[in-house]
Length: 193
Image 1 (spheres, rainbow, N blue to C red):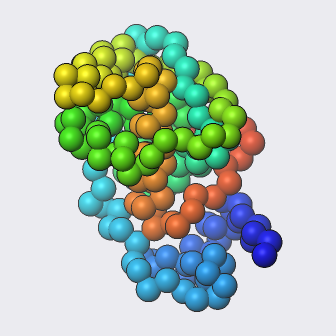
Image 2: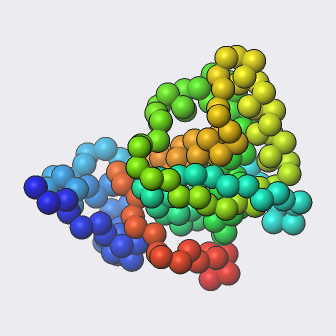
């Protein structure tokens, strides 16, 4: 059976405007049946840690599968539209996602890893990030706490990968989506619109 075509952001926005607020339109994904599950309350979603655009940064890479990179790019746009205080640049969104994972305790981070599982065996792409020094320091501390508890990530990139994959999933849940829409080929700077 052929997989249905993914809707663009514009198509999803038009569909969201046409239906009642708070309902998830899963009809296109489930063959015509509408989901009875309401969307998560957006005002109850925690706000991402504030990451200043002026903070000193360091260049870092994260390796993601094509699918995970697509989801992270899409989640950035979905969060801007559905999460109060979400930053308007992908770099700041990614830094906030990394900071959120680092702010969890060891058990919570381990639960995130177990829930997400290992990334798939498909080829990975490198995504360059400018990570604020304060976030990089928080990641160093979190990775040290994890090591002391017996959980070892192979690298910072693996930690960053979990953060972006986790935040992508959270973004879909906050917006009441079963699947994130395809992002545009070139990501916009949303706070400049």
